[in-house]
Structure formats: structure tokens, C-alpha cells
Length: 336
Image (cartoon, rainbow, N blue to C red; front, side, top):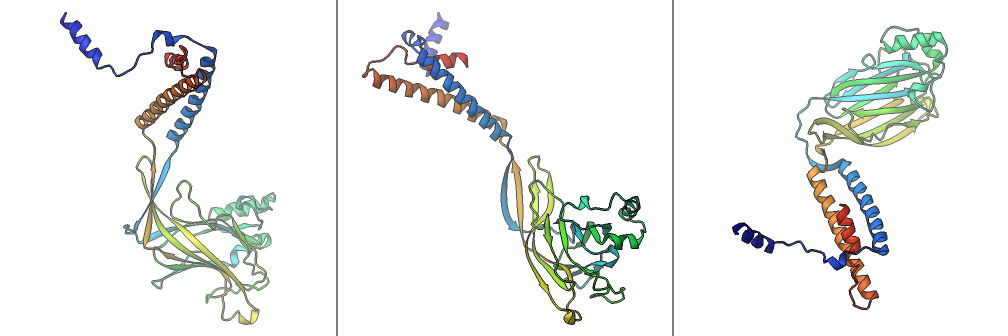
């Protein structure tokens, strides 16, 4: 007896309305509406699942908090000059000069406007052997390199994390003590397949990647002015990656042979470090949040379509309720 009274009191708290027996009759219109609503809800469910799987990125700007003395520079470019004629140096703001020709890999190649991995003359076994030797850092036949006419410069180097200039010049032009490169050999036409600072992260855009510049004379200066922005990348698993991204402005200038004594031809990368850093954070929607949104969408859609269906039927019947008003909603709820 006590349990029955308790059950009656609990029943008073029921906030879920019940559909009357007369309104549970099925109809063709209700069935069609139920099918359409089910298809619509399937599309919404797929859209929500796609949104749940998507990784969102947020950007925060702050004063660079990192303390680093060195910075990694990644290069992969092909220059239309033989490798023995090229020199690579870094001059930084502290007055230090770093000779990078030995630190990077200079591989004989033939210049083409395409991928650095698709240079020609590789079918000649003699060339293949010399390319393998150069790639492994072993001495190779410089005559072969001159015949191929181009050089692929690639690798990663460590430089001081301060403003600096990276120079790619011809031997004997601008630096004392090096053998003089003949003017007919000088050609600073180049293709940049990669030029970046630090480690790569997803969706990183390096403006100089896949760019080509054609030289029109032996005495020409290609200058790239780069502003490097320190970047902290945090993935959705909270792994932290310290790297850099940059913006670039480029210019070129040709001059006559008479002015060659005062102007050094070559490719120059002048970069500076910005004091502002960017923090990129990945995030994903939690599974609980996904379920809550999905339930809200399904429930709201069912109720809204039910009310709309009832309003239309009332308008059509002139205000008289049709016993089939709630059929589509009840049918869908039974399936759910």
C-alpha cells in the first residue's frame, strides 16, 4: 500500500507528455514525413561526426618567452652552377662568419624547373656513381659536376638565433683566398624546393617553397628579406614543438661587369627574428560534447517537425485536430 502511494506521488512529477491513443494511428503522410526526417537526421549526424573528428587550431600572440641560442635552417635548392664554383656563408649580427659549404650537401645535378629529385643525366652510370659519392660526402669527379652544370644544395644547419645574412656566391667573388670563377660559368638561376627555419608541423606554409628565379646575366643579385616569427605548436595530445615561420620580400638587381668590383653577385637571404611569437594550439571536441550536441539536434528536430506538422494539419483542417497529427513523431520515437 505504501509503495503504491509512493508510486502515485512519483507519477505526479512526470514531465514527459504522453500521446493519446487516438493520436497513435499511422498514416501515409506521416510515414513519408518520418522517412524524410530520418534522412535529414542521418545527414546531420554525419555532419556532427565529421565536426567531432576535425581538429581545430587556435592562435595566440605573445612576447617570445623562449631562450634559445641557436636556430635550425633547412635548405633544399638547385642552382644552375657547378658545385665546385659555389660558396655558402652566414654572416650574423655578432660579426661571426660561418662557412657552410662543407656543412651542407652539394650534389651535382642538371637544372630543370621541376622537383629536385627529377634532374636529368641520371641514366648515365658514371653520373649516378658521382651523385652517390657526393650525397655520401665523399670526393667526386669535379669534371662531371661541371658537365652537369648545376648543383643541388640541401641539408640542415645550426646558426645563431640572431639577425644574419646567408650568402650563396661564386668562388672568388666577394671572398678572398678562393679560386676565381669564370664569368661564363656564373648563373644564379635557382629553384627553391624548401627553405625553412626549425622543424615542420602540419599545415605549415613556407613562402619560398617551390619557387623559381631565372637569371638574365652573370652579374645579378637575388635578395630575400625574411621576418622570422618564433612559433610554438601544441597538438591535441599536448606535445610541444618549438619552431619558426616567416614572411618574405624578394628583390633582384642586375649590374654590369664594370661594377662587379663593388657589388657581389649571388643569392642572399637576410633574416631577422621578431620579438613576438605565435602559439598554435590544436583541440578536438570531446566525445561527451559530441553526444550532447547529437542528442539535442535529434530531439529538437523531432519536436520541431512534429509541431510544424501539427500546425499545417490544423491550418488545412480549419482548426480541427486530426487524430493522425502525432503519427510521424510517434513512429520515429518508436524506432529510436
